[in-house]
Length: 311
Image 1 (tube, rainbow, N blue to C red):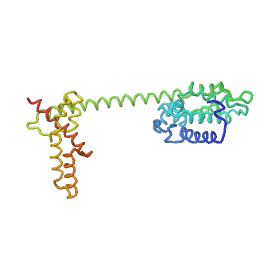
Image 2 (spheres, one colour):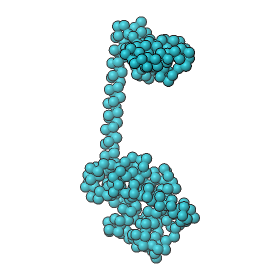
Image 3 (cartoon, one colour):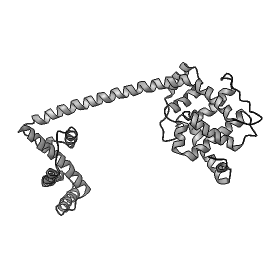
Image 4 (cartoon, rainbow, N blue to C red):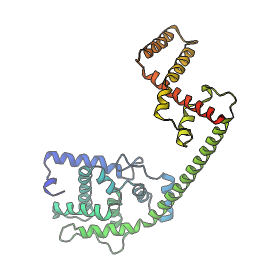
């Protein structure tokens, strides 16, 4: 982005205000549902933020912003999602911090353009709300050796780098705590997934044994899910020719099922089902009839598989 692109015509001024109102309030830790960019994940829960604040010796406000960046709500992610809008917001935030915390009436627009590029390149892992926090902490004397005094009324990228580098070190312990929680959570989820897969494997093995032990199997003993997991396991494989040869059997099975559905149905519903069968006989299949044909084909394939296992 160049200074020319940021000249404050009514259109660009409106864009800048829209960017600020959209992105910066969302990135601020006082917003409990904050994501910075709305499609990204939400930050850590408040109890966790309080625990990390206590362990790292920092405020909840800082912990909340760190939690957002650790969860992926970063400056770099914001630029990737909407470059123009986020750049406008980032430049506006830098200008605001520079004026409020350093006093820099002589700073040119090009300096803020360069500062924004510098932040994205060197500190893109931060959440945008952390920029103002860094300046606020620097102003409070939290960063030894860092001064906010502007050079001849001019804000510099060097000054910005000193503030953010000090803030990076300041937030380091909080990041480590959040990463630890993130790793533990990932390990738990991995263990749960392995257990789920183990349980599914055990269920499928038991289901195969049950199907093979059926004395006089019928289509009613078979399900579409049986077909899905048997084909996934390579137990059941149908050729195109076998699928075509099964057409009439599938059709007849659906007709029988539809006639059963007519029992206890209202006169109007029986009329609908009868019309559905008649249309199908003419080759005009409703979506419902086609879905029933698909399910019946899978159940018949399982039935055939069972019978093959018995021979």
